[in-house]
Image (cartoon, rainbow, N blue to C red):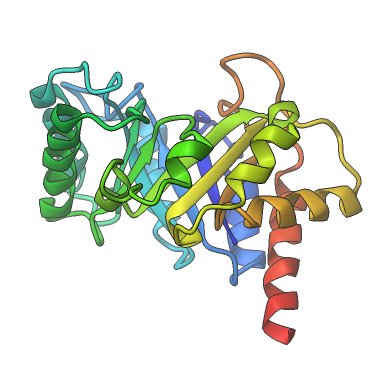
Length: 264
């Protein structure tokens, strides 16, 4: 189990410190961190000075992977614009002269969930561009459709009729905590045969949970995916613009689960 963190938090003084502290204290936990300085990479300019100071710090932690945010508008955005944004992230290192001012791949947001041949070709081209970027470490590709229905995930032809074979990680559920608890949603999501290491779940509007309940929730998510993020921020459109107050506790619980599995 690992953490997928949409870090849309402006890097004002101390804002990213909880992430640094968690990565240092919990070296068995892997973090994939999505950077989004300008609803993308800041086309036509570099991110401001605070980003130029803070992004390289992330590279000091071997358990942190960084991804640049690019929206596809469900493949309605012109593919050339998507490729230009990917290329802009790739150029950060060169333009700044800062070796560690880079990302390791791209988080393609607003991707479609139902299969379409044209969308498949579009996302294939975008993924190939990511893997060809010279400054990226590994060229990691993530998709976020927000939701992939259990019917698709449990289909025997899911790998032929989805975009899962184009990605290293796909967010299969980004919804409220309340919706996650719906038995008609939860049970089918846990029945798929896809490698969980390729899947992620993001839950927002999480209520305050005791440590015991949080452990239970993390265990339940792990039945579906190996990557997760939980936030108890409830304000619409602000879910990822501040680190959730439960962040440290969430990482501790995830680390504890890793330790239990190693002992078991």
